[in-house]
Image (cartoon, rainbow, N blue to C red):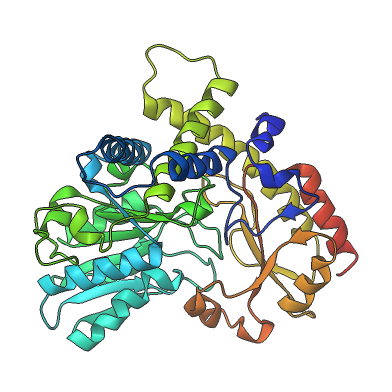
Length: 408
């Protein structure tokens, strides 16, 4: 991977600072910034009017959402629901889909997820919905499908699970999980926030019923998207004005509409992936968009695996360090979100000593509170988390390691 080409696309990387809290929020592509500015200068009007600028704005936003649909391989643009955050979109989903359920119906959540994909479902207990918890294996730190099978029954309506843990970094086998969930006649809702910055998302291949992620962790603005199979979205009741009908998908699920300039700016992300491909590969006529995207993300994953390997190799050699997650840098099994605890130092003590070196890492529970509690990490003030993405460099990782050596 041409790291200089990549880093040139992110204006913030020209600063004398190392960004390694990317799972909390990645840096933004220059193309995204340009799109936001361009929209506000040239098309900052309300949609739906008959005059030319309004019609142009509508076409631009329609095109942007079609590119989002293409990026995640949705069947149609209407399957793309845009919202302010993944947390809000999942809350909207729980409020609308639960009206179809009866007292005694069941939802399964995990104890590894960010609370965004937990609280909207556990709060349904007030409506008489039973909540079951699919617990992580405390030895392997993985969710085991056989344990899920024990929880599913004919009252199960939905299974909420993360594609990749924002603490463990572990990639869950969503396609395999979806198969078991659908076999039971239930739906699967996937939080892809910690996965989408690192790997290709193909919602048809995964067979996910609902899939969410945040653009601000995927090199874009503070905005989020939820994919839903069209028929499932159609069944949902509206959460918008009374005159917006049930058939108006996705508008019925976008109260107050979506943010126009930020939605338009996501074009900068889809364009970046295309330019990344053209820069690194010789385009072949018979290659479709999804094949090119696969090659792009395979190269990104390879680079990220090298970064993770440098850091994990060091951490594995420190006797006082316990890695929370898979200890090897296997791109097929984990993303480069790496968490650990120290036997003698609390997590906040470590991070505060790193801060002065102009390196941004973080400590805490990262809203995966149930996981931190299950692993008895509360007394450590959570974990230390180093979250890398493909614009990070081996030199940056080695600089962090040099700082760690002065602390441990």
